[in-house]
Each structure stands twice: as structure tokens, then as C-alpha cells.
Image (cartoon, rainbow, N blue to C red):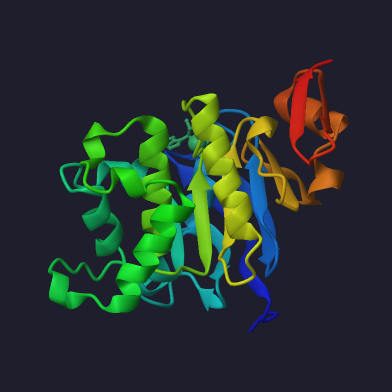
Length: 265
Ligand SMILES: Nc1ncnc2c1ncn2[C@@H]1O[C@H](COP(=O)(O)OP(=O)(O)O)[C@@H](O)[C@H]1O
Ligand SMILES: [Mg+2]
């Protein structure tokens, strides 16, 4: 057993696809109280990495420990209930013709899909209301998922991922392709969420420093299947490290309110 406060731990993880190394000797650890952003150029291996962290994929070699459980030694459904994942892969398996309110509620018991109203309790409905309020989707509750804009859909999917009360929430590019208002709505909801000590640890993949919620305190930079740097966000997100990770001269910084920016040097 590791440290009780360690939530995710990868040790010397390799991942191969068609003989190609996609992840190489990745070691990485998250602890209670940390919210992580994972940054890196296209193809760096971010999505592959979080699929392992979310118990949706197995390493080719090395160890992955999720909430104290060794991946591969426990039924993955147990881990799926405890680690929420929100990505475009999840979207593909969600019935788009369901209403927002039904979709969110149906995730209350993780992969144990329940469908009928009598399967749910008062606290489930209360939780759904709280989540719909936090993510600003109350007015969308009777709409079908397929009729929503990208930004609205993202907020619904995150509320849904939180419905099972996971200990970790993993987000893969949650604001990719959404407009400025939708981005800011989502980031402020994530900030509010992360200020509550009962909330899950958040691990978020993004390409843009402007998309990092101000309250996030840890960062991992990926390049070519490796973690180039990780740890306290202010130490990791430096102009030097970003220039190295993106192979392009970049300058970054933080404004007074804690938000990050980056542009060419
Ligand atoms: N199923 C697959 N088969 C072969 N190569 C893949 C597969 N999935 C991803 N890759 C490759 O692995 C690398 C990392 O992909 P990915 O984890 O999606 O990166 P990122 O999310 O950082 O853009 C890329 O070069 C991609 O082409
Ligand atoms: Mg990706």
C-alpha cells in the first residue's frame, strides 16, 4: 500500500501501439488536495495517459495504481465509478436522444445503469439539481443532448460525470472548440468545484494556458510520450519548459487574478 493521500500513481509505464512507443517510462503521482493540468503538443500522449489514469486502458508494462488499487487486479467497473471521465470518446457512447435531466440522473450509480424513476432517491434528485445549478444547465434540462451547442454539451457531460460522486474527475480538452463565454462559464464552475474540499481531484488536459482554471495547483508537461516536467504549477509552467515542450519559442505568465497566458517569444 502506498501513501493514503496518493490518489493516482504510475510507475515506469510504457504503452505500445503497433510496435510504436506512445508512452515511455512515465512515472507520475497525484495527491489529495491537488488539481492537475496536463499540457503538451498534439500527439504527445495526453489522451493515452489519462485513459490509463481513468482505468479505461492498461499499460503495456509498468504499474498503475488508482485510488490505492493496482490496475488489473480489481474489476474495472469498480474503478470507473470512482474515476469520472469526460472526453469525446465518452460522448460517442452516450445516447444523444435522451434529455439532459435523464442523462445526468442515469449516471448516479456509475456503470450500474438505472432507468426508472423509482430506482432513484431524494438525494439523487437533489444532487442533480445542485450540479445543474453549478454548471448553469437548469434551463436546458428538458432538451436532448444532440440539440445542445458544444459548450452546453460539455457542461452537461461534466455534471453527468460528477453525478456518481467520483473521487477523481478527468477531463480531456473540455473547452476545445467552445466560445469565450462558454469557456469562462465552465472554468468558473471548475474553480467553484475545486474550492470545495469534498469535491473530487480534477485532472484536466488542455493545449492552452488560457484554459487553466486559476485554482489549479499542479501541472505536467508532456512531449513525445514522456513527462518532461511535473509538479507545482508555477515551477512547471515556465517560458523555458514550454519552449522545450512545444519546440517553439514561447513566453508565459500569470495575471493578477491567477489566470495564465502564453504566446510566441
Ligand atoms: N489506436 C492507436 N493506434 C496507433 N497510434 C495511436 C493510437 N492512438 C493514439 N496513437 C498515437 O499515439 C500518439 C499519442 O496520441 P494521444 O495520446 O492521442 O496524444 P494527445 O492526446 O497528446 O494529442 C499519437 O502519435 C497518436 O497518433
Ligand atoms: Mg488528445
